[in-house]
Image (cartoon, rainbow, N blue to C red):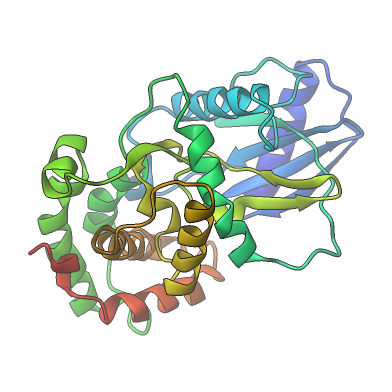
Length: 302
């Protein structure tokens, strides 16, 4: 898959007029990220997912939404990895793969990860995203949980049959509350709802030689602020609240956070069918499964 993605990215870039002689993989997991050397352009090519985990909307629509939001953030002077100015700001299809093109940034290899510090900065990101003038969908990552649970099979030692039965039962309770804004606001009328990064932003603050930059807005959408720290644990939730108070912004609601943590765990569990392709996923699934088993059933909503 990685080699296919690299070849497709290089071909698409050359078609767009770029000179590509040494495409180099920077990262590979759910997407293959390729530096199209010698240019300053990076291609991100999402992997093809099994049917139960495929997005219900066309990939290009989701990718265009990300490009639009990040370009707007960059125009406001906010520190993000921007779309490449060397190609049109739109997704490109090549060899059955849809990809986007971004500006290459040099990572500070000497920097140590600082998730606490990064999490204190998430309220700053939220404050800027709250001003975004475009339309965004409600909680896009949740659309895959129902189909994913239906398609997932038990894997002894990783996701047991009783785990799967509990997860499906929980989703039957959670789905009407979480999959529409009106349902959520009925259950949580005081929630802070706004545009979100959507995919664990503290893990997507890149430390570059020129300073930290936010990246990977593939799941950008509308939702409660608690979703952007779902699964982080109490220490990082405290870090978020610390950053929010310092900026005079809303802090996390513990009851909503409990529900979001549970839903993040379900989102991870439905990745179980990907383990044969991505063996390192197994450790993360086990960790989330262990935490989830100790959580109240359906986050107290049943």
